[in-house]
Image 1 (cartoon, rainbow over the protein chains, first blue to last red):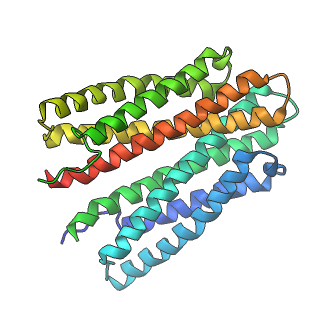
Image 2 (image 1 turned 120 degrees about the horizontal axis):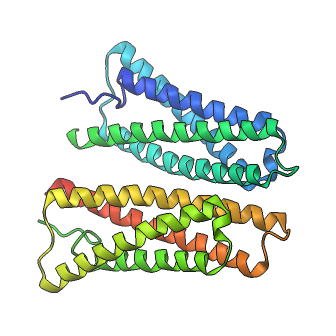
Length: 152
Length: 152
């Protein structure tokens, strides 16, 4: 059977998972190191979703790394299906969180009042950008695994 | 070949498309009948996406209705692939627009200032809810067609 680069158990898949973990963690840190994130619903939602995203990506990064080291890729259709569905649900939630955060930040920047001191606002923007990057990588993982699924 | 209920050329598919058209139009109308929607980026984005969504859903509703009437379902893999990809891209954009709008409306309601007179705010909320419903139906269409695709 052909290898699909980027799917579970390949080194490209490992890189994708590592990227997801890094971007999710960066998004969470930039958001929660500033104070007052809990006063906006969208920011709380982002923190919640990133808190789900990080352990999921990190676990799958460990699985991929192990598969690459022992040269024994994971090939059970059941497990692959769970991974595809989990990735897909998490990427949908991440997209919703990222766009909510981006629109709220945009509104706060436009309002230009006491709500958004420049130091915090740029942090919020970076956090939203990191969340979008994490969404993109998560979507790529999901598509690569979906591509592999009918071949099993 | 089996019919997949909800895919292109079935009466369930026609109902899904009709629902998408109705919800997208309702979302657009509730948003643009209130004034000042163009002063928020998220609301402009929602209006743009709904303006893309309505002709797409309406055209496919016509195609489905025609297929049901002449009892000749559409079975070209190429066209089906275009429909699946188009549905998927539009549903992603709709989800982003709906969650942006919902978070901005939530912020405006919490701020409780002159930005959000009760009459307009409830309209914005209804518009966001309609956009979420439209996203859900669009996603269902996309999944049913994706399910049909490998059988062709």
